[in-house]
Amino acid sequence: MSRGSLFRFSCAALEMGDNEGVDTVLYSLDGTNVTVLRLIIVGAVLVVGYGAIALLCRVLQKRMEAREGSAAAATAIVVRRLVQGLLTTILLVVGLELLGVAVTAVFAAGAVVFLGVGLALQKIMMSFVAGVLLLVEREVEPGDVIVIDDMMVKVITIGLRTTVVRGRNEGNFIIPNYLLAQDIVQNLTFRNQDYRIRADVGVAYGSDMEAAKAALMDAAMHVHQDMHDHPPDVQLVAFGASTVDFHVFAHIEDPWDTPAKSSELRLAIFRELRAAGIEIAFPQLDVHLPGHTLPTAA
Image (cartoon, rainbow, N blue to C red; front, side):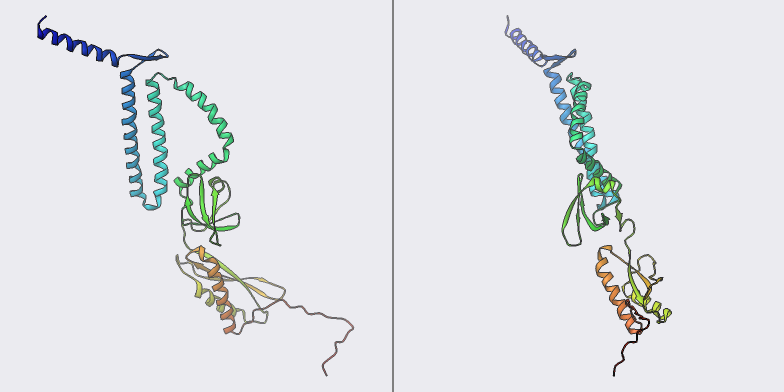
């Protein structure tokens, strides 16, 4: 055998050995022969596919933030995670199918496990779903002032499972998101920043009612912060046992300032009524004793 023939034979043998290596059947599952080559291809598809999914989701998040602004940053993150999770699941299913794994059987077993976990973690799952809805619908956002369970709080952050709020005493509270989705929540800043406050006052029956109303209107003007052409208002609401009762309304910019602005409004009412010589009435009781004469001072 010549030297050239020996070289060609060696190359052919090496190539045959390589082909036999990548075509070696590792296992057979449901009629599918999984070779080394198929395993390498599936691995490459998973790696490249996951990288493409991550890149696509980052672009989607940036597009949403650029279109909606910084206020939609949390929503964009949630949408990116959901889309990335869905596409990654589809990619894994395709990979398992290529490797001969019966995905339907895996899903059937997983459904049983998921049902058991879901029953055990029902409220956590409810909070997760509610968190997604809150971030997508954006009916409650960080910075909003809300009232829940008769407590006024300011929203600090909204997560997938819980929402952090701050109370009037500067204490922070962690609220499960399902409470915000199920309970009646009053959003004081929802699509409207100004908020109306009210102070109640009663004047004596002998007062000039027109002068009293004018003085109360002046007091409301001292506090009123007109944001959307909402004028202050004074209403006579009742004739009490000892007083003529008025409600004084004024609008303020931030509901979070309600206690301070309400105090300021009451002080303005006291000051204006005193300046107008109008008495702020208080309950009085006249006692009549038939057949008795009270002694007079000497």
